[in-house]
Image 1 (spheres, helix red, strand yellow):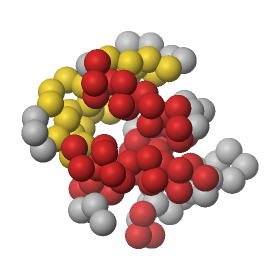
Image 2 (image 1 turned 45 degrees about the horizontal axis):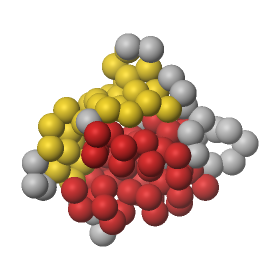
Image 3 (image 1 turned 90 degrees about the vertical axis):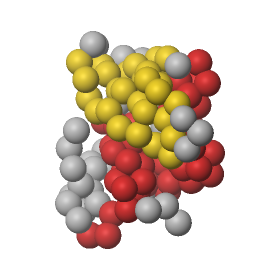
Image 4 (image 1 turned 60 degrees about the vertical axis):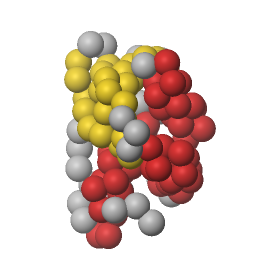
Length: 111
């Protein structure tokens, strides 16, 4: 199971996907493309992999040139946990509303 910092990162990624109306598979593919090619775009969302190390990658998310978020994600999370988490989290959203409670009952944070 990912550490709480990684879970917060995955929660932020799910929120970014939700706000930009991108399904889990498309968003995961977008992340993988950015990881391998440094940049990727889907609709108006641009993802840039700004730095890669053996253990993690640092991503920048923008829409129309405006920064939404920027944070590191571990390589393990990208390879093992992210797709499953996105499918779970985005699949649990109903009627186009983001739940007010996030992971472990904490309020979901806006980006």
